Image (cartoon, rainbow, N blue to C red; front, side, top):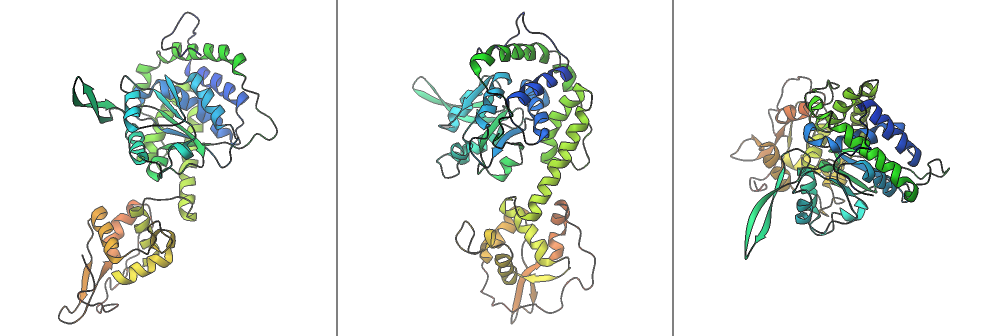
Length: 400
């Protein structure tokens, strides 16, 4: 298919609502969606690729499935027909290559087989992930060495571009996953979706693409001025990834905005349930303070470092015990480093320094952090600290 970048005489201008319905009907014919929510997300996300610069942030689209043969690659093929300047990537050789792809303007990156392409065990994957994360907002760049004659110069290359990632439950970092709107596919065992025969579909898909290109130019100025109302729970990362789609939904009219609000609340609730059930992998320093909240149990008290470390290993062995990725339980030294480097918290000393003392932390030190994580505040209780140490520790037992 010719990847047209400009309109021609065969393209017709449609309203945003009409355009979304055209794409919704198309995706619904050729892709089997278990959840009709996903059938709404796809046209919104596809149109956003053409207006990403005006929308400022670009949510990553994660096409997920627990099993192969669920239509992930097929869906990427359909997105390829309609997204802005798409490029299909089954493998990514280097971060520098990725940066050069977007140096002349935003392109829609379609990454297939992400469970292999973005496997954390592969070389340079950490840098690739950082690059994909940085390209989430307009104006983001990456310094890259560029050869000029016999010399090498550092050039800031733009990284801002829409990205769709497809894989079988890919192991991507949580900070990347929180930037994603997830579409989940299952095998179409009843053959509900029509076959994607591109020899037949190429021309009608191309006509729709021309209609998209003819239409989006009429939306740019208006959509840049839309500041949509969002559910009050939609803040921070949720706001960054859902606001672009809500702006498109408002421009579309009808009940599109209401649908998007429902999907936002569903997304927020899903994350809460995953965290409560232990299904969501949080970055260690966030998981640490959540686990400490459980250990303190809603009481205002002091607990020694040695006791906290021991309780952490028992409470969440996957993060802090022998089952952790470090292959050993968290040490008092590592525990202290995390709290100091991430939250500027230091242990406190309780007891008689002339004989024995206990080093540890009061619950009061964590209260503002817990509140910021929307955890229920600890009820006031007296006394707030014990008058006697809860455990003896040797003066030279801790290294800080």
